[in-house]
Image (cartoon, rainbow, N blue to C red; front, side, top):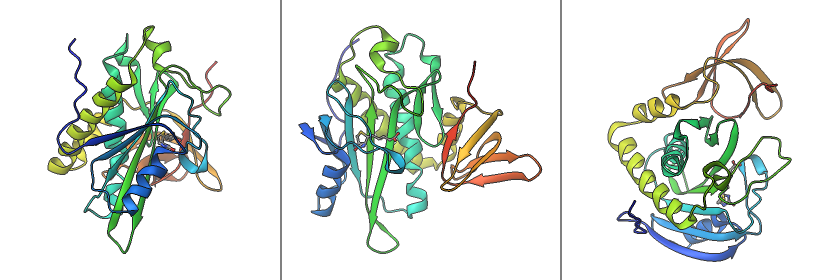
Length: 253
Ligand code: BTN
């Protein structure tokens, strides 16, 4: 296989040995006027951030990067970039896997191999009025190691492929796939992404638990609404449309 480290047109990469967080650096750049397409990567992060205020443990040997965007669409639509990102990560790593079919997605934007999380995505945005000024897509991929004792099972690419993976090549693959899915989304809307994501969704038509801010709900995962919200069939209540939350699957013996 021939290797190319070239970014797609419109993207430019700045690499750091260590940062507090690539999302924080991309946000600082956004606030001082950097153009869309800037990618900040770091070999390690001292204050890596996960979703919902969690920490993303970021030792060297992992892949940590953030893409700065300046979407011109409403914020609710820009949130669909989390699906663009999940599809891009999936496509970017699938070719390295011995069994690419094991790759799947957990709503809204975790990437799993089998039942274990291999990558996480954190979107952050800033707006002056109703229009977004900037949006940062932060992506963390476990390459050489993965955290233990989290509230979810994790894995890493080296464990899944049995061979070394070059983080620089994974980064380029993901950015190319990101650019491709962005164009599909801009040209054809969310539907092709919804279909592609559902094709690899974990737990479809099974019972799941969705944790919201103050409580959780159980129900059957019926799919995605046209905007990417989760459709949950709740016993005795009917279908609920859930715009944000954390999905948990029943513990399997
Ligand atoms: C999650 O909780 O699943 C999201 C994790 C996102 C981690 C990435 S690593 C690169 C970027 N910088 C951060 O501080 N977080 C994101």
